[in-house]
Amino acid sequence: MNADKLFQVEIWPQTERGYTASATLDLPAYPWAILDAMDRARIRPGEEFNCELLDTEVDFLRNRLPDNPNLNALNHLASRIAGMEDWERLAMEGMCQIAYGVSNDRGLGQVSDESGMLPELDDVPEKVRDLIDLELFGRKCRLAEGGVFARGGYVVPDGELQQAYPDLRLDIQRPDYQILLEQADGRQLKLPSQDELLAVYHACLDCRIPQLMAGIDIENIEDTNEFAEKLQDMGDKQVQKFKALLTATGCTSLTEANYLADNLELYAFDGNYASPEEYAMRELREGFPSMSDATLRNCVNLGRFGSALLRQEQTAATAYGLICREDGQQITEREGADSLGFDLTME
Image (spheres, rainbow, N blue to C red):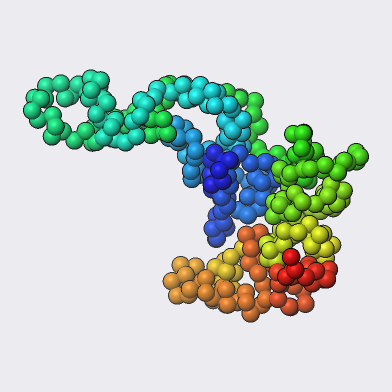
C-alpha cells in the first residue's frame, strides 16, 4: 500500500462467470483510478460487486468497518481522513476509549487487572497471581469489546459509529474530465479545456489511462490537452483495448501512446479473458465439451497450457484482456518507438 493511502481493498464481481477476476485498489483514489480497477476486475457498469478490506493505516477502524463495505463510501471516508490535520485525527480517535501504551494482549490483561476490571480475579490469593495467564485474559477482553491495538495504544470504540453523510451517492460516478492536473499554485485543471492554457508546472492527479500519469507529468500542457481531447472521443471498449495495448508494450510515453491510440485497428482484442488459465479453459471446453470444468482442472496445468497457447498465437494476456497484432507478429515493448523512429537505448 502506498505511503499516502489509508485503505487497501480488493474488488470482484458478484456474478459467477466461470473465472475469477479481481483487482486491488488503494484509497483514497480519484474516480478514474476506481473505474480502472473495475475494468481490471471486469466489473460491468451497474453490476453489483464485492469489496474486501485488505489493509488499513487507520487502526482504530480496522474492526469497525463492515465485511463488504461500499467502495464509494469507504473512499469518501478515506478522503476525509486524509485531509485532516493531526489534531483532527486525534479528535476522531478521541471518539474512542484509548489505553495508551498498551500494544498486546498481555499488556491489556495487566492493565485490566491493575484497574480492577477483572472481578473474577478479586478472590485469587496474591501468592498465585503471578501464575495467571494475563495474556489470555487480555485476549478475552479485546474480543469481547471489539478493541484493536493502534499506534498509540489499545482502542475501544465509544458507542456505535453513525452514518454522517446520509445523502452521499454510493454509486461510482464518471468524472467530467479525462485528465486532472494540479498546478504549481495548488489549483486543479480539468482537461480537455477550451481555455487558454499557461505552460506552468503541473502534476497529474487522475487520468482515464492511469499507466500514462507519470508521462503526463513531464509533457507540455498543450500536448496533454490534445491527448485529453483524443481520449474524450474514445468509447469505453476502445479505452479498455488501449489500456491492454499499453500494458502489453509497457508504454508510458505520451508520444508513443498517441501513435498507438491512432493505430488501434492494427490490433485484435478480447476482453472476455485476462489470464492464461482462463484462455486454456476456454480451449479445453471447446475441445472436450463432455468433460466438467473440475475434471479439466485436475487433468491439465491450466497456467502452463494457456501460456503455451498464447505464445503460439503471439497473444499477450493483460489484466484488461487478451491482445495481439492483426498481422500475427509478436507485440514488443518497442511497438510505438520503432514506428516513430525512437532509439530507446539513448540517454
